[in-house]
Image (spheres, rainbow, N blue to C red):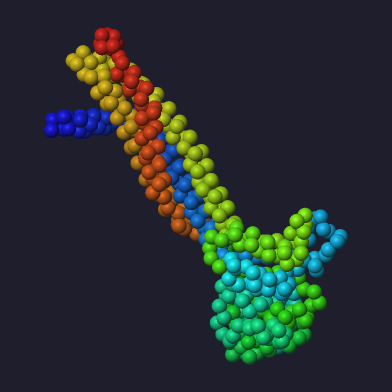
Length: 416
């Protein structure tokens, strides 16, 4: 019982003694811990800001559809002059080959677009992007039909002159009865509006917020309006986490379907948002780590200040140390006392720095139109700050503590 109580009592007494030393030398203690305070303040604020920015960027990309794959034709450098862009377009037979053979995709939709003049009564809009789409296109894009009906396969096969417009277009074109059943002119061709789709603005980082008139017509219909429209495809993957598998499978199917030889380059390109998200996560983690390392250097500078002050403290208390050793004090006890004092200085500085960091983080969250509304100091950053502060205290307090423990009592008592 006595063996267990004495160390605990000794630690409590040592901590109280260290606090008394700090209180008696308030100005010196404040200046000593200033480097630690600034270091912890900076590291917690930077990690909170970088983490919030990283989360915001990822959420903006994820809102575009993490399971989405975009597919288009491309003319390789080595094939220029032998094939044209018309030969590499993603066409219905390419899409059908993927539907029949790909196991990693859930659905695929072709799309083509043209710039057209759209009119209704006295309302006229030039340069509107009119898209010819397959029936699954809006579902893959996560766009909801809020009135009327979506397209079906027969609409495209029969090349019907029907259209789906967004609710913004209903207002701008001043279509009656919510738009459904009204007629609009697309390049002077009459189209019946059969559905209205919700307006979906792009995320803020992609210039979102500006609504525009949108007109969709069946894919087969746009091919009757434009001789050889540029067409591409959008693919919905069957599940998350299959991006690379899907990329290889689609590449294999399309190369085989287009009869490309082993030496031929791909005549198509792909972009999978999930792969980009993985890269962004890796970059974000790297930025957070780099920021932490760079700001952590200030903690090391603060540690040097701790060591210098502790050496001064040892010099000032040399006679006290000599007297205690002459009375039989164990060198380990003396070393522990100075080490605890150094660690306590660092931890107290870390606590003040954390309070300042939290205050700064709350201030960042209150700034309007900035991607810091979800900024917060992660738990691991708090643990890192305190752990690093205590570690700095141990590392830079060890030498002064050992020096104090090794003082010769006779020499120490003669010290003036």
